[in-house]
Image (cartoon, rainbow, N blue to C red; front, side, top):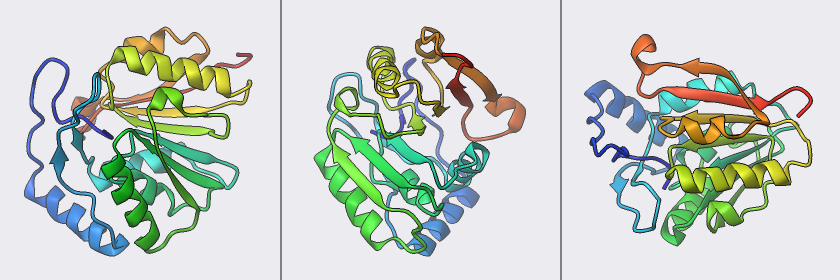
Length: 211
């Protein structure tokens, strides 16, 4: 459930241009993994699985300035494209969470065979609301579910972080109102897809000073 190919207003995402598909294929071969495809997810409030372009993922990861002390958590990790990209950085740990056992099996297989890994990877098969986020410092979401679930997940992160500062990248941010309700978070950067000519908009959040 790592991404949405069907947006809340019912619009279907546009097919990727040939150049993007070729770039994605090149990265799949380079890393030795397979994460392509679009798959329905039969679970309340979960969106369809579809993978974000590698170029977009890598741009977000660069902006997050991952460091050796970070534990990176992909909430709705699907087949593992993002966690494999994040594991190319020498961070403390990379974690994927997904409610689909099938996706988790594929993500685990991709993590084991990926080339260029510099960090350990864990994949957990459970709902995002039930995960313990206490180890995380950087969180990534690609519009994995609706506002109800999103609010519960953000509440859980707030509870588990124990006043530790965190950073969050929310790509294709269709439910920013759920973040606005989190008074402990500050939106410090926003990439508008129209202004940038990019695949998706991205909203970046961090813990407010003193929160």
